[in-house]
Image (cartoon, rainbow, N blue to C red):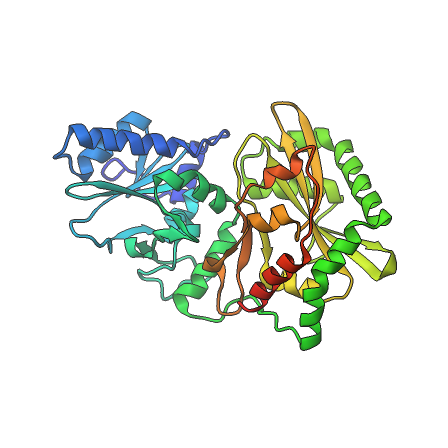
Length: 391
């Protein structure tokens, strides 16, 4: 033991027993309220005093500079001026706790500020990171490396729920690859799709193809068959809903529906239709009693898929209603008006060889309403595709 801390064991080994099976990310808001109340009654309290009070209140355990509990981890820091250039945390330490909210509590002389510092909200890694690679996690990040605004959303307590929902949709590996590229200024692992003039025309015809496809009897029959197949597996899907990890839960439900791993590249399923048409389906799982912001698609991969004549792409939303013990599914075109309104381009993810990704940050729960009707506005969808092509 050194200063009351475990000296040898890696933080990843040490933190495991503190992971909860029932993660409640919004306990982080209780932390914010407690710190603000404490500082209001103890105006002269410094970082050490606040940290000690927080550790007692939430029964947090200290490991080096982190205070860790089952629902969040917190790093206390200080800054006297307007800037915040202090080293916050090593990337390896962040990796161990990246599946729970990681809150930076910045204690200033006259105020306390709070930021989420999970890997999704880092611009790059700064300190001792010249050897950083995807197979060699090195270096630390500074306060200035934490995004204060993520795709138009302020990084503050009022948006912690939305931000953490967003973070959960990306894996550590995806964030690590992005950070390696941003930090080392190396070529990205992705490939920017450069369509020919003919492929560009095909892409822009895709909304009209989707509108035509959505009204064919064969496509409507396929949707009914898919709904029926999902209902047959509803019991297994409900059991998997207990998995807290968003990516693991979604992948396992997807495998139950498809009958195996994704082997089709861009989409999870594909189905041939008459007239040379093909529908590719991306499965998206949503727990109906929780908020979420599911990742949508890699833009370059979408454009490449749509560059083949006759291809339509749809989401199969699988709504899991745990309190009512039921599963609902809806298959909807990516060009549906409600879906397009909910689709946000995440420029934060656009690397040197990528147009970035999209995320469904709007209200997609509308698709589960009994009165929902798919509506494809071809001109609006074409404008959206033009925007993607020009990124």
